[in-house]
Image 1 (cartoon, rainbow, N blue to C red):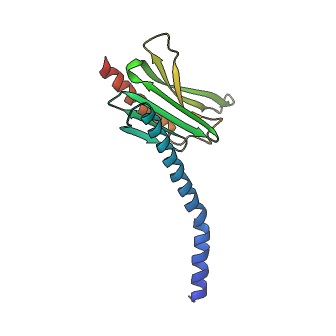
Image 2 (cartoon, rainbow, N blue to C red):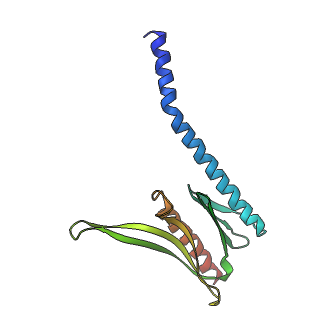
Image 3 (cartoon, one colour):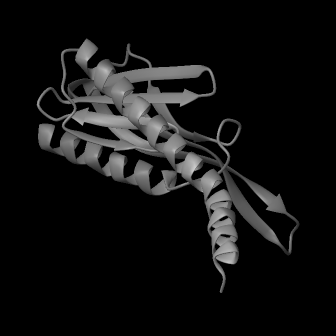
Length: 163
């Protein structure tokens, strides 16, 4: 193999890899901004995140000492920052909104929305939800089902210990 062919091969491989490198860097920056946003949200409530999870579109975190759960989501130009005091929560459940696609013989369900839903001990407080996935905002599911189940279990374990 001559050196001209080797150089051409290296250049072609580099050109092929550049979009993937840029995409990975973009994801890292986005996740870093989400982490900074949830840490700032917690800090604004005099809390420190001790357990967190960052996805492509949202960040969720828990201050175990203060028993506060934080959620931050950014889709395009829309930002959602929420938090709940788990001492005030009666129950937490996953709400999966879905619809059927297909005909009678070939029918399956598709998920439209995933919410982590909280009911308060005080009935005067309206229920609240953290929307982890919405088909109108997200491209597709990317681990949100596992994440919402995990966080539902974390919160419910804490609620059981509180009683």
